[in-house]
Image (cartoon, rainbow, N blue to C red):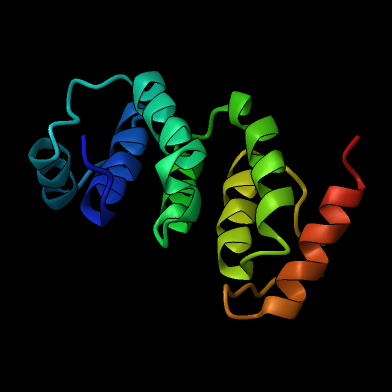
Length: 138
Protein backbone atom coordinates (compact mmCIF):
# COMPACT_ATOMS: atom_id res chain seq x y z
CA UNK A 1 0.00 0.00 0.00
CA UNK A 2 1.54 3.28 -1.12
CA UNK A 3 1.16 6.20 1.26
CA UNK A 4 0.74 9.36 -0.80
CA UNK A 5 -1.31 12.52 -0.42
CA UNK A 6 -4.41 10.97 -2.02
CA UNK A 7 -4.19 8.00 0.33
CA UNK A 8 -3.88 10.31 3.35
CA UNK A 9 -6.88 12.35 2.23
CA UNK A 10 -8.87 9.14 1.77
CA UNK A 11 -7.77 7.95 5.21
CA UNK A 12 -9.05 11.18 6.80
CA UNK A 13 -12.37 10.80 5.00
CA UNK A 14 -12.54 7.12 6.02
CA UNK A 15 -11.97 8.00 9.68
CA UNK A 16 -14.75 10.57 9.48
CA UNK A 17 -17.09 8.13 7.75
CA UNK A 18 -16.49 5.61 10.54
CA UNK A 19 -17.57 8.29 13.02
CA UNK A 20 -20.77 8.84 10.98
CA UNK A 21 -19.69 12.24 9.70
CA UNK A 22 -21.79 12.94 6.65
CA UNK A 23 -19.80 12.35 3.47
CA UNK A 24 -20.09 14.14 0.15
CA UNK A 25 -20.10 12.12 -3.05
CA UNK A 26 -16.55 13.36 -3.64
CA UNK A 27 -15.37 12.05 -0.25
CA UNK A 28 -17.08 8.71 -0.75
CA UNK A 29 -15.49 8.42 -4.19
CA UNK A 30 -12.00 9.19 -2.84
CA UNK A 31 -12.41 6.49 -0.17
CA UNK A 32 -13.55 3.97 -2.78
CA UNK A 33 -10.76 4.85 -5.24
CA UNK A 34 -8.19 4.29 -2.52
CA UNK A 35 -9.83 0.95 -1.67
CA UNK A 36 -10.39 1.95 1.94
CA UNK A 37 -14.15 1.42 2.11
CA UNK A 38 -13.87 -1.92 3.92
CA UNK A 39 -10.69 -1.15 5.88
CA UNK A 40 -11.37 -0.82 9.60
CA UNK A 41 -10.32 2.45 11.25
CA UNK A 42 -8.07 0.51 13.65
CA UNK A 43 -6.25 -1.23 10.78
CA UNK A 44 -5.93 2.04 8.91
CA UNK A 45 -4.54 3.79 11.99
CA UNK A 46 -2.03 0.96 12.52
CA UNK A 47 -0.92 1.38 8.91
CA UNK A 48 -0.40 5.12 9.37
CA UNK A 49 1.38 4.80 12.72
CA UNK A 50 3.63 2.09 11.24
CA UNK A 51 4.41 4.25 8.22
CA UNK A 52 5.20 7.24 10.45
CA UNK A 53 7.58 5.11 12.54
CA UNK A 54 9.40 3.76 9.49
CA UNK A 55 9.60 5.25 6.00
CA UNK A 56 7.33 8.21 6.80
CA UNK A 57 9.58 9.47 9.58
CA UNK A 58 11.30 11.88 7.18
CA UNK A 59 8.50 12.29 4.66
CA UNK A 60 7.14 15.72 3.81
CA UNK A 61 3.72 14.04 4.09
CA UNK A 62 3.97 13.26 7.79
CA UNK A 63 1.96 16.38 8.72
CA UNK A 64 -0.84 15.11 6.50
CA UNK A 65 -0.65 11.72 8.20
CA UNK A 66 -1.12 13.35 11.61
CA UNK A 67 -3.96 15.42 10.15
CA UNK A 68 -5.64 12.23 8.95
CA UNK A 69 -5.13 10.49 12.30
CA UNK A 70 -6.70 13.51 13.98
CA UNK A 71 -9.90 12.79 12.08
CA UNK A 72 -10.09 9.43 13.83
CA UNK A 73 -10.79 11.06 17.22
CA UNK A 74 -9.74 7.96 19.13
CA UNK A 75 -8.46 8.54 22.69
CA UNK A 76 -5.85 5.79 22.27
CA UNK A 77 -4.02 8.15 19.90
CA UNK A 78 -3.29 10.75 22.60
CA UNK A 79 -0.07 9.16 23.90
CA UNK A 80 1.49 8.57 20.46
CA UNK A 81 0.46 12.07 19.36
CA UNK A 82 2.11 13.60 22.44
CA UNK A 83 5.27 11.60 21.70
CA UNK A 84 5.14 12.79 18.09
CA UNK A 85 4.69 16.39 19.24
CA UNK A 86 7.82 16.09 21.40
CA UNK A 87 9.77 14.89 18.33
CA UNK A 88 8.31 17.31 15.82
CA UNK A 89 8.19 20.57 17.77
CA UNK A 90 11.93 21.30 17.46
CA UNK A 91 11.98 19.90 13.95
CA UNK A 92 8.99 21.30 12.04
CA UNK A 93 6.41 23.75 13.40
CA UNK A 94 3.98 23.02 10.55
CA UNK A 95 3.90 19.32 11.46
CA UNK A 96 3.68 20.23 15.15
CA UNK A 97 0.63 22.36 14.32
CA UNK A 98 -1.11 19.39 12.66
CA UNK A 99 -0.42 17.30 15.76
CA UNK A 100 -1.85 20.05 17.97
CA UNK A 101 -5.02 20.08 15.90
CA UNK A 102 -5.26 16.27 16.14
CA UNK A 103 -4.89 16.51 19.93
CA UNK A 104 -7.48 19.28 20.06
CA UNK A 105 -9.88 17.02 18.13
CA UNK A 106 -9.44 14.59 21.02
CA UNK A 107 -10.42 17.22 23.56
CA UNK A 108 -6.88 17.96 24.75
CA UNK A 109 -6.36 21.55 25.97
CA UNK A 110 -3.53 22.38 23.58
CA UNK A 111 -4.33 26.02 22.88
CA UNK A 112 -4.86 28.62 25.58
CA UNK A 113 -8.52 29.72 25.73
CA UNK A 114 -7.61 33.29 24.74
CA UNK A 115 -5.99 32.08 21.50
CA UNK A 116 -9.06 32.05 19.28
CA UNK A 117 -7.26 32.46 15.97
CA UNK A 118 -4.89 29.75 14.86
CA UNK A 119 -2.68 29.35 11.85
CA UNK A 120 -0.12 26.80 10.83
CA UNK A 121 2.02 29.73 9.67
CA UNK A 122 2.07 31.39 13.09
CA UNK A 123 5.11 29.41 14.20
CA UNK A 124 5.78 31.46 17.32
CA UNK A 125 2.29 30.91 18.76
CA UNK A 126 2.31 27.27 17.67
CA UNK A 127 5.60 26.66 19.47
CA UNK A 128 4.41 28.46 22.60
CA UNK A 129 1.11 26.54 22.73
CA UNK A 130 2.85 23.23 22.08
CA UNK A 131 5.48 23.84 24.73
CA UNK A 132 2.87 24.86 27.32
CA UNK A 133 0.92 21.71 26.54
CA UNK A 134 4.00 19.46 26.70
CA UNK A 135 5.10 21.05 29.97
CA UNK A 136 1.71 20.09 31.43
CA UNK A 137 2.15 16.43 30.47
CA UNK A 138 3.57 13.88 32.91
